[in-house]
Figure 1 (cartoon, one colour):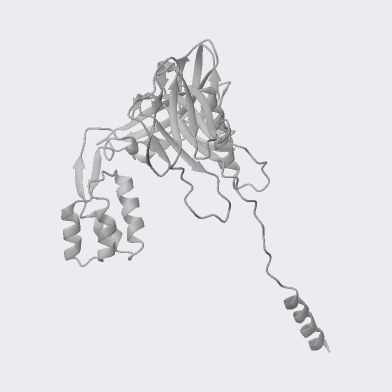
Figure 2 (cartoon, helix red, strand yellow):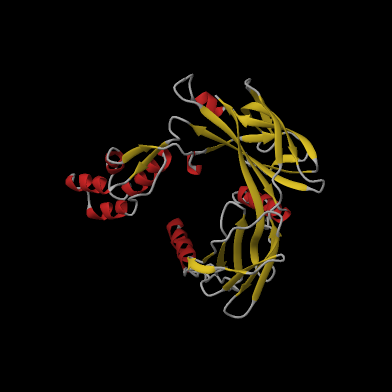
Length: 362
């Protein structure tokens, strides 16, 4: 009898199973604008469209008319490059108000405006050589840190700033790696697969730092076998340069206990804040790069403070973006909408300035 009831129960469970057709809202194909600009780089605007969940096509916008209208100056017309990117060889100038005008194929006009703020002045930098423990309110954890005090000066209006910490290893930072035609020939003699060599040929002439050459080569090697990524590194051309390439700097932890400056959410990489006039700043920079030296004396670990003066729009965008990223894995967190200053679209059009300050060697 029990066997009979079990069979009936199994039949009911199986018979009640069916596929569900889930419906998703169709996208209105709202245009997404991405343009963060400074005096250091020529104009570049990226345009994409919001897609529906089931749409796997490219979202690049390649048929728009993009213009930058400076205050009291001639209009700058951008040309389409690729992948939704529009460029000009002209560079923005600090202190000028710029207006972005985008007209899509349906004659819809998307606009925004922003400017590059003046660079904050950093003075009286006093780094400590004594490490201490800092308890971070950002993620309720203890960190070995080095205190850093300095002054920052700006306008009498509200100024917006972001601090980041970068370190430069003088032993590895000046070494670059190249895939050359000789590399390909040597690997061909070692009977490497032609498909693998075809992928490597795309990297010929690309200068890579010590971390990139290992990561990139390893990713390609995973497709063909566990030994390929090891063999290839010995065939790369190693060169030494005198330039500190941006990609050779390593980001490290940074914290603050100054009023008005803080780490957003659980973020441990960015300290953001607002200030007026002159302000005394206290930061706590990571001690980890110093510890990693293990008392080696054949190279220096340079500490650099990355200071970014931001327009108010960039500041709001950065804060909400960090909060959204930090909350994405928390099912109980409220939805964070990333700030946008685009009219008739979404995205960001905002100016900033950036300076790297070398303040200590270890």
